[in-house]
Amino acid sequence: MGRFDDRATLRRGLGDNIRWRVVHRLLGRGPLPDLSGFRTPIALPDLALLHSTAPSLTWVGHATFALRLGGALVLTDPNWSAHLARLFTRRAPPGIALQELPRIDVVAITHNHMDHLDLPTLSQIGNGPLYVTPLGNGRYLRELGITNIKELDWWQSVRLNELQIALVPARHFSMRTPFDRNDALWGGFVFKSSEGTLYHSGDTAYFQGFRAIRERWGPIDWAALAVGSYEPRWFMESQHMNPEDAAVAFVDLDARALVPMHWGTFSTADEPLGQPPERLRSVFRFRRLDERRLWQLAIGETRALTNGR
Image 1: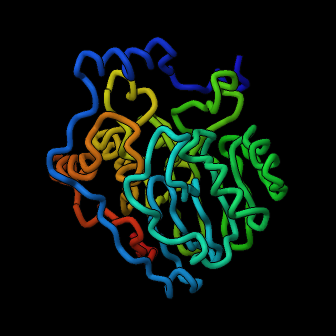
Image 2: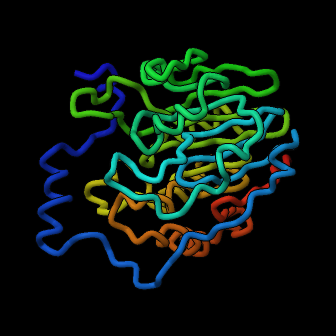
């Protein structure tokens, strides 16, 4: 029994993995082909803005952002690796070299899946920043010699000068090996300062908790929501949102802007690499949401964060 089994989403087991990864491929039901020749958009980061104290957000790729808020530089789920456990190859380079970043103040890790808790990258970052992560994940960091760690339960928070960092619930699970399922907690983060509030969902399926996050920590100015790794739906629905789910979560959060993430970097599911942003734009039009509130960043793009709704 895992320590946090009672909080885990209903998760598919080994038999379902074999059905998806092996049987469906033998039956010709593998990943949907990308016939468009899609390539993830790449942009140059605004190094001057990154090195200033002005609030900004730079998408490095996947769930990794360089966030400047409250004067601090935060990395979320930092991953600069070319491969995930030798199974998945990076499809777009990191938006900025790790060495080009200014001093990192905080590393926030949402959960222990290998695309979010990337040990090679954390080894490069080392022991300088404050590491904030859900309960039970500190042991992975301590094995790297990292000691400045704050482990949080859901709804707990820590403050670094002007920046408050809160761990909030997510509908997901944790596992790095077949023997440690749900031994460590998972979640999303809210980053709050007088300059505004950013929510990072981590990995999550859609759930009613988005409304609770808004009620406790709102108003949310910028919602970085995972929109990829959603096919096949029968397998992924209890773990990951699709673009339609993300649009509903965005409304539940009453956020000012939606920043899609967790797409275009690693192809870990069956949807085409470029499908998530296309579907997200379509659902914005269908729901008559203001498309100016959809911040579809290119990898490497830096966006200034300005407060006010």
